Length: 273
Image (cartoon, rainbow, N blue to C red; front, top):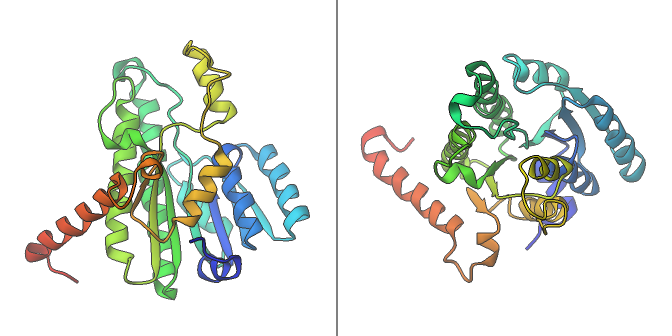
């Protein structure tokens, strides 16, 4: 059952940071959170798109919006983001960045370019989760939502680094869920296959995918609403399998059981603190 807007804002407000907010799923998260009464920090490289979204949210929902034009693949991205956020109390951090702009065989893209993707999908995710998570734990409430990909579940031809880095974020998120679930901070990995965005359509056209412009794809607004409704049911939501499956026998439920089981086994050797 969805959490009422006032309860949601109390638990995850007053500010939400949405990394990768310029379009698609990130913008959909911002609109849905603004509707719930949360102030929004919008983060992306495309400053013009963020400014337009800021104007829309402020006029439509009467909330406060901070725009941070930031390349999240930069080595100091988290430090710069934290400086921009300042003393604002962030109750929800959403990391929606990290698409693969290359989609090539491993050796057909340079080490330097793969390094940027590694920072975007691993280092920045880790650093921001550490910084925002620490403040949430100190308050005893908040949420972390990592938007990932089903590529995280195993290796894929022409997506070696993308799959590897998304796997890092998935395992980080599931581990943090196990550490934080009894301390008031929710963690959810949202694993998706595709989502209908201009970027996705353009990539499909460039790759000569049949029906690239007409193929039915999941809508960003629907995915954002689903993820926010399921935020307290971590650690992992796999779309669309978890929606299509009947009863409690879902891939996400299996991953939850795996995390709990492995954590209990490891506690014998590493402690249960």
